[in-house]
Image (tube, rainbow, N blue to C red; front, top):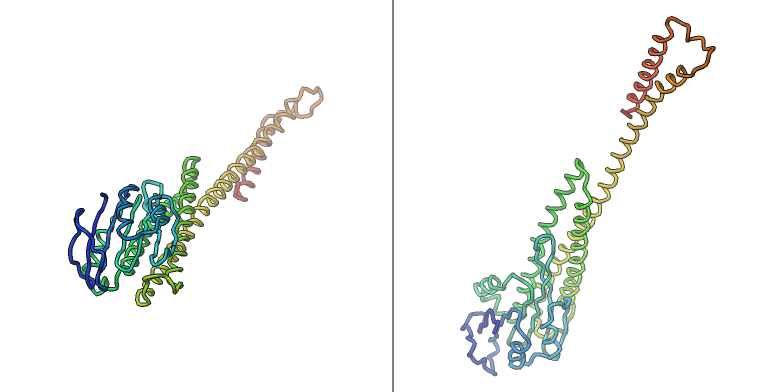
Length: 323
């Protein structure tokens, strides 16, 4: 059984760890609840937990699929939430899923694809029993807060990479491989931004919907904090998306400017070379009656004309910045 943790709490304090053969009592005191954490269970493994806690079969079906989008559903007196996780592996943002079943006396989490276990969350809450005493709804907040906070290291890493590329593109043009890589990063940002947008909707519903089961008014302001964090993540992703696009545009403009400089230089040298070509072409014609052919200074005059005309054209292009 892929149970990462199974614990019994009373008034926010840990009572005991539940072993695989321990029986969860049918009747609980008002201040008791159970927190079970599962990692990628099979259908058969989750069926026993579902039967014990009376989980809705449609919610169980969604919890077994690692490709579900973030959402909030109500099944009778139970709340079902799916949150999306994000983890950067190389240049790819790997998304995962955490499904959370919430009832009066239990919180059951099912993780898929996320390498970040809830061990630290559980330890932090157990050190704050006055917070954990709120019940399963505070567990829901803590897990969602943990998931959303995990977005920012991903965003920071991508931002650092894009800023380095943005600085380098001012000096060195990007090659085709780097441009393809940049477009790939932009695609990952757009895909992750969509997921974060759905998580914003999840947080917003937890804040604004009054008839959600087992969400106390005392805990509801905490979900507003999650909404603020998700909104900040979404804003930063939008900024990264614009940076990625601007880097490509800047590279294109700089490349056009470099090509323009080269074109002007080639045009200037072509104009300079046109001067001796024209003069040499004129004096290379084999006409019998050309006054300069019998002139003693004809050859020095032609050279002076070539170098003088070429120098004048060179000076002119140098003056206007083409050379």
